[in-house]
Length: 212
Ligand code: ATP
Image 1 (cartoon, protein in one colour):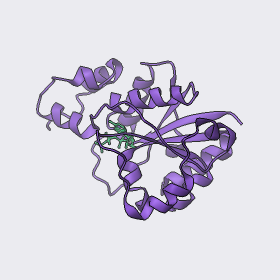
Image 2 (image 1 turned 60 degrees about the vertical axis):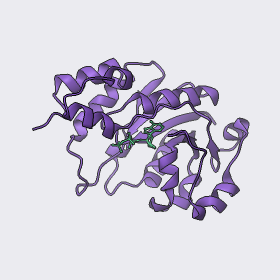
Image 3 (image 1 turned 90 degrees about the vertical axis):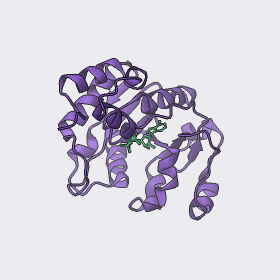
Image 4 (image 1 turned 180 degrees about the vertical axis):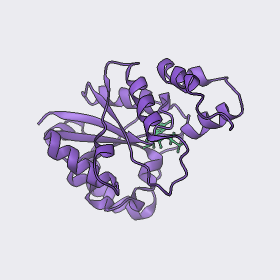
Protein backbone atom coordinates (compact mmCIF):
# COMPACT_ATOMS: atom_id res chain seq x y z
CA UNK A 1 0.00 0.00 0.00
CA UNK A 2 1.29 3.49 -0.74
CA UNK A 3 1.62 5.84 2.19
CA UNK A 4 0.48 9.43 2.62
CA UNK A 5 0.99 12.14 5.24
CA UNK A 6 -1.90 14.32 6.39
CA UNK A 7 -1.86 17.25 8.79
CA UNK A 8 -5.32 18.32 9.95
CA UNK A 9 -5.93 21.70 11.51
CA UNK A 10 -7.97 24.83 11.84
CA UNK A 11 -5.29 26.67 9.87
CA UNK A 12 -6.44 30.07 11.03
CA UNK A 13 -3.89 30.87 9.59
CA UNK A 14 -1.54 28.07 8.43
CA UNK A 15 2.00 28.90 9.60
CA UNK A 16 5.54 27.59 9.50
CA UNK A 17 5.06 25.85 12.86
CA UNK A 18 2.66 23.58 10.97
CA UNK A 19 4.66 23.19 7.80
CA UNK A 20 8.37 23.17 8.67
CA UNK A 21 8.37 20.32 11.24
CA UNK A 22 5.74 18.33 9.32
CA UNK A 23 7.73 18.42 6.08
CA UNK A 24 10.92 17.55 7.94
CA UNK A 25 9.24 14.57 9.60
CA UNK A 26 7.54 13.46 6.36
CA UNK A 27 10.96 13.48 4.67
CA UNK A 28 12.46 11.44 7.48
CA UNK A 29 9.66 8.87 7.10
CA UNK A 30 10.25 8.62 3.36
CA UNK A 31 6.96 10.32 2.44
CA UNK A 32 7.26 12.94 -0.26
CA UNK A 33 3.80 14.59 -0.10
CA UNK A 34 2.02 16.29 2.79
CA UNK A 35 -1.71 17.01 2.62
CA UNK A 36 -3.01 19.95 4.65
CA UNK A 37 -6.57 19.12 5.70
CA UNK A 38 -8.64 22.04 7.02
CA UNK A 39 -11.19 20.91 9.59
CA UNK A 40 -14.81 21.87 9.72
CA UNK A 41 -15.62 24.10 12.66
CA UNK A 42 -18.77 23.49 14.65
CA UNK A 43 -21.18 26.43 14.35
CA UNK A 44 -21.05 27.16 18.09
CA UNK A 45 -17.23 27.55 18.11
CA UNK A 46 -15.95 31.12 18.23
CA UNK A 47 -13.92 31.25 15.00
CA UNK A 48 -14.31 34.56 13.16
CA UNK A 49 -12.50 33.58 9.99
CA UNK A 50 -14.72 32.04 7.33
CA UNK A 51 -14.13 28.54 6.01
CA UNK A 52 -13.52 30.11 2.60
CA UNK A 53 -10.63 32.22 3.92
CA UNK A 54 -9.13 29.28 5.81
CA UNK A 55 -9.27 27.10 2.68
CA UNK A 56 -7.81 29.88 0.51
CA UNK A 57 -4.95 30.35 2.99
CA UNK A 58 -4.23 26.61 2.95
CA UNK A 59 -4.21 26.70 -0.87
CA UNK A 60 -1.90 29.72 -0.77
CA UNK A 61 0.37 27.90 1.67
CA UNK A 62 0.56 24.91 -0.67
CA UNK A 63 1.99 27.21 -3.38
CA UNK A 64 5.08 27.69 -1.22
CA UNK A 65 6.31 24.08 -1.49
CA UNK A 66 5.68 21.49 -4.20
CA UNK A 67 5.41 18.72 -1.58
CA UNK A 68 2.24 20.30 -0.11
CA UNK A 69 -1.32 19.77 -1.31
CA UNK A 70 -4.78 20.70 -0.03
CA UNK A 71 -7.04 17.87 1.21
CA UNK A 72 -10.66 19.06 1.49
CA UNK A 73 -12.39 15.78 2.36
CA UNK A 74 -13.57 16.86 5.83
CA UNK A 75 -15.38 19.88 4.39
CA UNK A 76 -17.17 17.66 1.86
CA UNK A 77 -18.49 15.19 4.46
CA UNK A 78 -21.79 15.65 6.29
CA UNK A 79 -21.74 17.25 9.75
CA UNK A 80 -21.01 16.68 12.53
CA UNK A 81 -17.32 16.30 11.84
CA UNK A 82 -15.14 13.97 13.79
CA UNK A 83 -11.53 13.25 12.91
CA UNK A 84 -12.14 9.52 13.14
CA UNK A 85 -15.00 9.77 10.61
CA UNK A 86 -12.86 11.86 8.28
CA UNK A 87 -9.93 9.44 8.45
CA UNK A 88 -12.24 6.48 7.78
CA UNK A 89 -13.63 8.23 4.69
CA UNK A 90 -10.14 9.19 3.51
CA UNK A 91 -8.89 5.63 3.91
CA UNK A 92 -11.90 4.23 2.03
CA UNK A 93 -11.41 6.74 -0.78
CA UNK A 94 -7.63 6.53 -1.20
CA UNK A 95 -6.90 2.94 -0.09
CA UNK A 96 -3.59 4.17 1.29
CA UNK A 97 -1.74 3.97 4.56
CA UNK A 98 -2.38 7.32 6.26
CA UNK A 99 0.17 8.90 8.57
CA UNK A 100 -1.92 11.44 10.47
CA UNK A 101 0.29 14.19 11.90
CA UNK A 102 -0.57 16.00 15.13
CA UNK A 103 1.32 18.33 17.46
CA UNK A 104 2.20 17.09 20.96
CA UNK A 105 -0.48 19.38 22.45
CA UNK A 106 -3.08 17.44 20.47
CA UNK A 107 -1.69 14.12 21.73
CA UNK A 108 -2.13 15.35 25.29
CA UNK A 109 -5.85 15.99 24.73
CA UNK A 110 -6.47 13.08 22.37
CA UNK A 111 -8.60 11.22 24.92
CA UNK A 112 -11.20 14.00 24.54
CA UNK A 113 -11.63 13.34 20.81
CA UNK A 114 -14.69 11.41 19.69
CA UNK A 115 -13.96 7.63 19.65
CA UNK A 116 -10.25 8.38 20.05
CA UNK A 117 -9.36 4.75 20.75
CA UNK A 118 -10.50 3.80 17.24
CA UNK A 119 -8.37 6.41 15.43
CA UNK A 120 -5.61 3.86 14.86
CA UNK A 121 -8.06 1.61 12.98
CA UNK A 122 -7.62 4.01 10.07
CA UNK A 123 -4.15 5.53 10.37
CA UNK A 124 -0.82 5.76 12.09
CA UNK A 125 -0.46 8.83 14.30
CA UNK A 126 2.75 10.83 13.97
CA UNK A 127 3.38 13.27 16.81
CA UNK A 128 5.45 16.43 16.32
CA UNK A 129 7.10 18.18 19.26
CA UNK A 130 5.55 21.50 20.11
CA UNK A 131 7.79 22.80 22.89
CA UNK A 132 11.18 22.20 24.43
CA UNK A 133 9.94 19.67 26.94
CA UNK A 134 10.18 15.90 26.78
CA UNK A 135 6.95 14.22 25.68
CA UNK A 136 4.71 14.15 28.77
CA UNK A 137 1.34 12.63 27.88
CA UNK A 138 -1.37 12.38 30.56
CA UNK A 139 -1.44 9.19 32.63
CA UNK A 140 -4.68 7.81 31.24
CA UNK A 141 -3.37 7.57 27.68
CA UNK A 142 -0.07 5.97 28.73
CA UNK A 143 -1.21 2.31 28.45
CA UNK A 144 -2.65 2.99 24.99
CA UNK A 145 0.53 4.81 24.00
CA UNK A 146 2.75 2.03 25.29
CA UNK A 147 0.75 -0.58 23.42
CA UNK A 148 0.92 1.25 20.10
CA UNK A 149 4.15 3.25 19.94
CA UNK A 150 6.82 2.19 17.50
CA UNK A 151 10.30 3.61 17.09
CA UNK A 152 10.80 1.82 13.81
CA UNK A 153 9.96 3.83 10.69
CA UNK A 154 9.73 0.60 8.66
CA UNK A 155 6.73 -0.48 10.75
CA UNK A 156 4.83 2.56 9.47
CA UNK A 157 5.38 1.29 5.94
CA UNK A 158 4.73 -2.39 6.55
CA UNK A 159 1.55 -2.03 8.67
CA UNK A 160 -1.56 -0.39 7.16
CA UNK A 161 -2.48 1.34 10.44
CA UNK A 162 -2.26 0.97 14.21
CA UNK A 163 0.96 2.70 15.33
CA UNK A 164 2.00 5.92 17.05
CA UNK A 165 5.39 7.44 16.22
CA UNK A 166 6.85 10.18 18.41
CA UNK A 167 8.97 12.22 16.03
CA UNK A 168 12.00 14.12 17.14
CA UNK A 169 11.02 17.10 15.03
CA UNK A 170 12.60 20.53 15.07
CA UNK A 171 10.81 23.25 16.99
CA UNK A 172 8.96 26.22 15.55
CA UNK A 173 7.01 27.29 18.59
CA UNK A 174 4.60 29.72 16.93
CA UNK A 175 0.79 29.30 17.05
CA UNK A 176 -2.03 30.73 14.96
CA UNK A 177 -3.31 32.51 18.07
CA UNK A 178 0.01 34.37 18.43
CA UNK A 179 -0.14 35.43 14.79
CA UNK A 180 -3.75 36.66 15.03
CA UNK A 181 -2.89 38.63 18.17
CA UNK A 182 0.16 40.23 16.54
CA UNK A 183 -1.87 41.36 13.54
CA UNK A 184 -4.65 42.71 15.76
CA UNK A 185 -2.07 44.76 17.62
CA UNK A 186 -0.69 46.09 14.31
CA UNK A 187 2.63 44.40 15.13
CA UNK A 188 4.19 43.21 11.88
CA UNK A 189 7.45 41.98 13.39
CA UNK A 190 8.15 38.28 12.93
CA UNK A 191 5.22 37.71 10.57
CA UNK A 192 7.70 37.01 7.76
CA UNK A 193 9.40 34.43 9.96
CA UNK A 194 6.16 32.64 10.75
CA UNK A 195 4.11 32.77 7.55
CA UNK A 196 4.92 31.72 4.01
CA UNK A 197 4.84 34.71 1.59
CA UNK A 198 1.62 33.68 -0.26
CA UNK A 199 -0.24 33.34 3.09
CA UNK A 200 1.01 36.70 4.37
CA UNK A 201 0.01 38.29 1.08
CA UNK A 202 -3.49 36.75 1.31
CA UNK A 203 -3.93 37.97 4.91
CA UNK A 204 -2.90 41.50 3.91
CA UNK A 205 -5.02 41.55 0.78
CA UNK A 206 -8.15 40.54 2.72
CA UNK A 207 -7.24 42.52 5.86
CA UNK A 208 -7.75 39.43 8.01
CA UNK A 209 -7.42 39.55 11.80
CA UNK A 210 -7.43 43.36 11.95
CA UNK A 211 -9.42 44.99 14.75
CA UNK A 212 -12.94 45.76 13.49
P1 ATP B 1 -4.53 28.04 17.46
O1 ATP B 1 -3.43 28.89 18.04
O2 ATP B 1 -5.59 28.83 16.72
O3 ATP B 1 -5.12 27.07 18.48
P2 ATP B 1 -2.58 26.27 16.20
O4 ATP B 1 -1.41 27.13 15.87
O5 ATP B 1 -2.47 25.36 17.38
O6 ATP B 1 -3.89 27.14 16.29
P3 ATP B 1 -4.00 24.33 14.55
O7 ATP B 1 -4.45 24.63 13.15
O8 ATP B 1 -5.03 24.25 15.59
O9 ATP B 1 -2.86 25.44 14.89
O10 ATP B 1 -3.08 23.04 14.58
C1 ATP B 1 -3.21 21.95 13.72
C2 ATP B 1 -2.26 20.86 14.14
O11 ATP B 1 -0.90 21.33 14.03
C3 ATP B 1 -2.44 20.43 15.61
O12 ATP B 1 -2.24 19.03 15.71
C4 ATP B 1 -1.33 21.17 16.33
O13 ATP B 1 -0.90 20.49 17.49
C5 ATP B 1 -0.23 21.19 15.27
N1 ATP B 1 0.63 22.36 15.42
C6 ATP B 1 0.27 23.66 15.36
N2 ATP B 1 1.32 24.47 15.55
C7 ATP B 1 2.38 23.66 15.74
C8 ATP B 1 3.78 23.90 16.02
N3 ATP B 1 4.27 25.12 16.16
N4 ATP B 1 4.60 22.80 16.13
C9 ATP B 1 4.09 21.54 16.02
N5 ATP B 1 2.79 21.26 15.78
C10 ATP B 1 1.95 22.29 15.63
